[in-house]
Image (cartoon, rainbow, N blue to C red; front, side, top):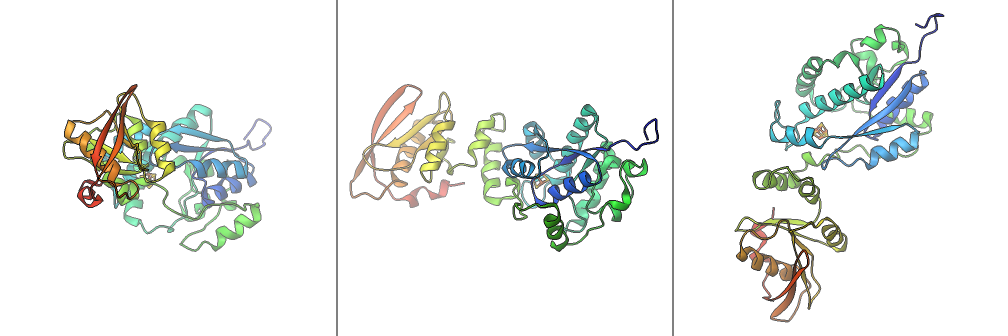
Length: 333
Ligand code: SF4
C-alpha cells in the first residue's frame, strides 16, 4: 500500500513466447492494472520471430536476453537429463526463470508471469521435478501463472495484495475454447498455432547437433546457426560438409562463410553451394566434397563437371567425375 492507502501498481515481467497463452497472460494482468513487460530468450535453437510479432501485436515492451551460453551448457551437461530428444526442458525452464528473476530484480519488478495452463501438457512427472527446481531457484514464490492461478497455491504477490487473486483465472486442461474466447475479448486476432518451435525437440536436428558436439563442440555460434541450413554430412576424414538444398540455402551458406572456410560450387553445370567450415581435414575429403557438389547438382549427360574451390581469396578449379548420390548418402547426418 502507498502512504495514502492506495494500492501501488504491480510490475510484472512476462516470460513471453508470442503464443496465444503468453499474450493472454499479459492482457489479463494489464486489465488488472499491472504494468507488464516481456522477456524472450535468444539462442540458435528457438525462433524469436513469433515473440517479436506477438509483442508488437499486443503492444508490450519485449526484452531479448542472450541465452546461448545457458542453453549450450545445459545441452552439454543437463543436471536433470533430457526429454525425448536433446531438450533439457527442466533445467532450461528453470534457467529461464532464474534469468527472468535476475532481470526482475535489476529493473525493480515484483513478479514473473508465464502463460502456462495447468494440465495442458501431459508432463506430470516433469512438473514435480520442475517445481522442485524452481523452488530452489529462489524465484518459485514470485512466479505467477495467471491463467491457472486459482488452482495453484497463492504466490507472494497475491498474498501481499499486489495482484487480486480473485480476478486471476482457473483454467486447466487441454481445451483451447476459453483461450479463444479471451482472445476475442482482448482483440487478439493474430496468433500462431500451438507448436513446439524448439529445435532441441527435433530428432533430425539433434542428430546434427550431437555430431557437432562430438567434433567441433559448441564454441562457435556460427556452426550452431549453420545447423539450420542445408543438408549436413560428416565425411570419412572427419570434415564437416554443408550442402545447399535450394537457392535460399546457397545464399545463406555464402553469407555465413568465414575466413578459412572452403566454398565449393559447380562451374559448368548448375549445382549446390557447399561449405566446409575451416576447410577440409584431409585432401581426400576435399575431392569427396567436390564430387558431392556434382552429384547433388543438375542431372547431366557429361562424364565430368568443373567445380570451383575457394578459400578466402584463393581460387582453384577441379574437373570432377560425375557419380550417383547413392555413393554419399551414408554420410548424411
Ligand atoms: S522445449 Fe526447448 S525451449 Fe522449451 S523448455 Fe525444453 S529445451 Fe527449453
